[in-house]
Image 1 (tube, rainbow, N blue to C red):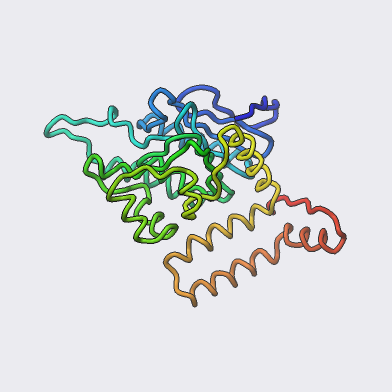
Image 2: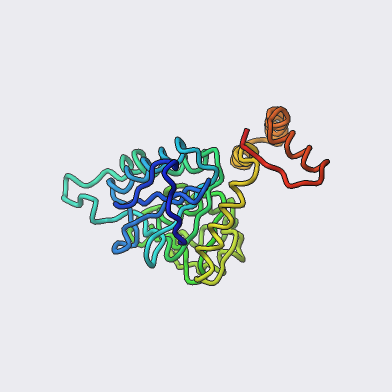
Amino acid sequence: MPSMPPSTDQPVSLESGPILLRWHGPVAMITLNRPDKLNSFTREMHAALQQALDHVESGGARALLLTGAGRGFCAGQDLADLDFTPGHMTDLGELIDTWFNPLIRRLQTLPLPVVAAVNGTAAGAGANLALACDMVLAARSASFIQAFVKIGLVPDSGGTWLLPKRIGMARAMGLAMTGDRLPAEEAEKWGLIWEAMDDPLLPEQALALATHLAAQPTRALAAIKRAMHGSATATLDAQLDLERDLQRELGQSHDYMEGVNAFLEKRAPRFTGE
């Protein structure tokens, strides 16, 4: 990703460790940083990522860009971080409940747009981490793999919820049961991700998208996230009521008045997220 040195008045950055946090104006960029292990998760990495997200929320970010270091985005759970000793095997349910599920829930409810830049292989929980973001861009060399079945497991980190809703049951079932690699271009055609692009373009285009979203009425973007995710389990009547309530709230916001005034005055709006 392009680098931009933070100014002295910018929020906390993390310049080393398994998670990097850098700032590009109002855009916070988090990089999964275990390239020698394809950025697979350990408990230490999970804790560092939650800390980075704390800094993102407290630092006033207006958009988040998530990517991986090296040749992969994320290979999911690092199996070397688990205990396979008979009688003492890692409780995967506890691992998921402690780390993966809170991470997916947090990304889905984060009150700002989240862009994933998938720079290489996204496998297992790493694939579903990317899909939990609001918009996914991927390099053409990238791929998405529901690798769980290859070690006798079921897709987790929201995979069984996200996949059928985005690409339909037949394709979701096929990916989950075969564990086959889905190339980025095919993922775009299927509607699983927003866009696949030539590898050299990904860093610049992902940052440009995150920067564009940061300049939008982010309070409205947060409401869009809430409404879109709520629609998966709501009835039409409930969804209509939610749209009404959100519109009533946003109709009293500074950004709404700014957008209307900018339209009437034929100028670019200056949104603040208020």
